[in-house]
Structures are given as structure tokens and as C-alpha cells.
Length: 163
Ligand code: S3P
Image 1 (tube, helix red, strand yellow):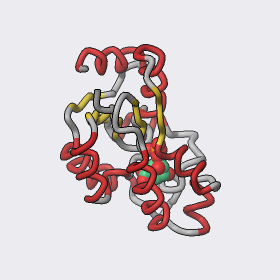
Image 2 (cartoon, rainbow, N blue to C red):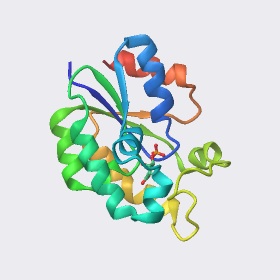
Image 3 (cartoon, rainbow, N blue to C red):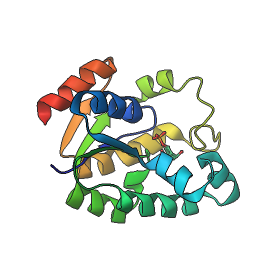
């Protein structure tokens, strides 16, 4: 079976849902953010601070291509769909699930987050970023799941139902 790639904005639940799916499907889980940190031996905030977003995006593309193309669940970083190269790769290699989440819900979920460089950058308009990215998530998605007001358990079952 082709691997399942979870895409969506920061706070859409990709990591938690990947863990829940792992328990039920007994499939390996990979996370592109973890892979970047392990491969390049720096945290994501360090990479953004020392090398900038462009370098982070290059690292992200490298690790995306290194993920298992079969029998794995892969949680991706929220910006993975920014590069056309990544969108093409996802369309070709995976079953892509877009976890669509409203701006209001994202704000609620990330209210105390201090770990995401883009979310915590006061100069970035995150609402606008969500608007800009949404067509790109939709472009790669085989299925779109609305996450607002749903528990991880409910979302997991919805995804299993689709598979
Ligand atoms: C990013 C999202 C983050 C991480 C990095 C950049 C983004 O992942 O890849 O901080 O551009 O939206 P999550 O979506 O898991 O927060």
C-alpha cells in the first residue's frame, strides 16, 4: 500500500493523528520535521534562526524524498506544499490526506505555542498564509477531512474509513 501523507496547516493535528493511526494500523510513522532535525542535527528554530527559511525548505524537500513510499504514515510540515517540486512528488508517490482546519480553530490550538518559528514571527500574517496555502493543500489532496471540533479518535476513524 502507498504511504499516507498527512498535510495541513500548523495546528491541524498531523502529528497526533499520525500517532493514533500508528496504534490502529500498526504502520511505521515518519515525521518530516523530526527527520529534518535528526538528519541535520539542529532543531527547527535553530535552522530558521541560523540558516533561514530557504535552507529549511531545501532540507524539507530532501527528507520528503527519503520517506518510505509504502506502508508508512507520514506527518509533514505545514509548509511542505509551498514548493511545486514537493507537490508533484506527493501527488506521484503518496495517498495524501489534507486535514483542513479553520483559522479560528488553529488560533485556539496554538495559543500557547512557542516552538514554531513561523507561527511566532510577529511580522508574518499567518491568516493570510493559511489563505494562500489552502489551494496548494487542495491541489495535492486525495481526500480532504475537516478537523474542526473533532477529536483525534474521530479523525482517525474517518481516515481509516476512507482507506
Ligand atoms: C512550518 C510548519 C512546521 C515546521 C516549520 C515550518 C510551516 O510544522 O515544518 O516550523 O511553514 O508551516 P508543523 O506544521 O508540524 O507545525
